[in-house]
Length: 122
Image 1 (tube, rainbow, N blue to C red):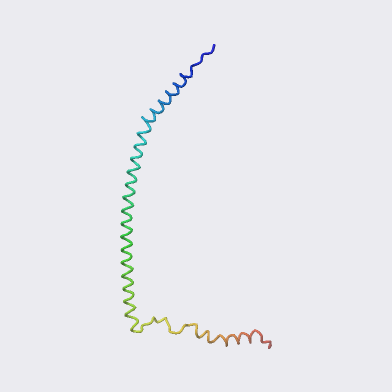
Image 2 (spheres, rainbow, N blue to C red; image 1 turned 90 degrees about the vertical axis):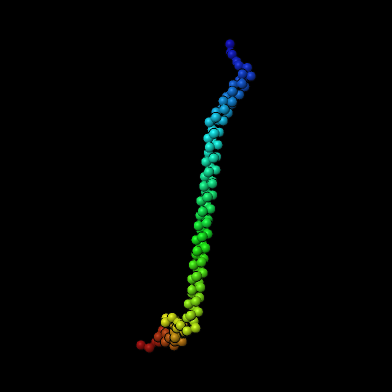
C-alpha cells in the first residue's frame, strides 16, 4: 500500500516554504539593505563635499598661477622696453651669423678637396 498526499497539501507545503523565505528575507536582509543604502548616501555626500573643496582649491591655484604669469610677462616686457632703446645686445650674440665665414670659404675648400682627391702626382 502506497500513501500519497493530495496535490493540495504539496502546494500548501510549497506556499508555506515560500512564506518562510519571504519572511526571513524581510526580517533579516531588507533592514541591512536599507542600512547599506543610507551608508551609500552618506558617502556620496562626503565625496561631493570633497569634490567641491578640491575644485575650489584648484581654481584658486590656477588663478594664482595666472596672476604670477601675468606679472612675469609685464616685468619681461618692461625689461625689454628698457633694453631695446639702449641697443643692448648679449655679448655672445653677433649681428652676423657665425656660419657666414664658413659659407664664404666653401668654394675654396671644395677646390682644395677635389685637387687632393684627384691629384695623381707622386
